[in-house]
Length: 137
Image (tube, rainbow, N blue to C red; front, side, top):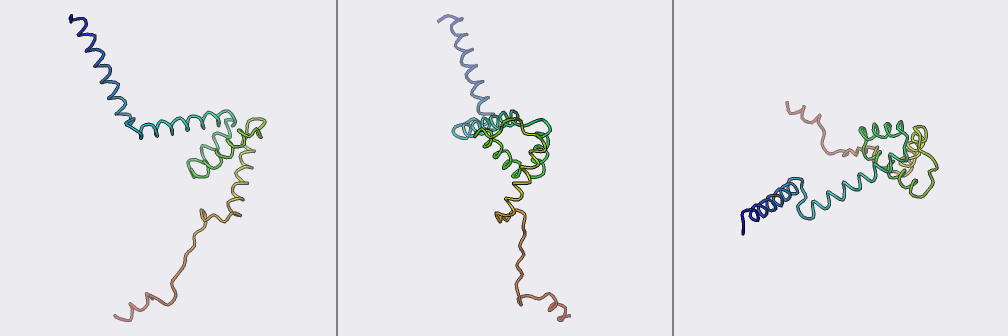
């Protein structure tokens, strides 16, 4: 083998090692990397669909909602994507239409009886009484 052949082999091996290090550094080791890559592709697809069906003002409002309550924003996004895929959206969604959809989702959550916004406190009856501690003094 000549020096040129050895140099080519070294360069190829060096490139292979660098590529392997980059993939390990980005968390792409085994199934975990594939899951992460799949989630990233889904997020990009969602963002692409939403940018096509939302006007900028509506997208801004949805972003502000995401800052406050991410589950609500995700639920709205899912509904918008479902409407777009079924062909029920004829034009881009305006901010007013988004407000109406938010109201409908809020009403649905209230009627559905979800415990997301309700706090129920149940107190024990007759068990412990804090006033009994004062009698020991």
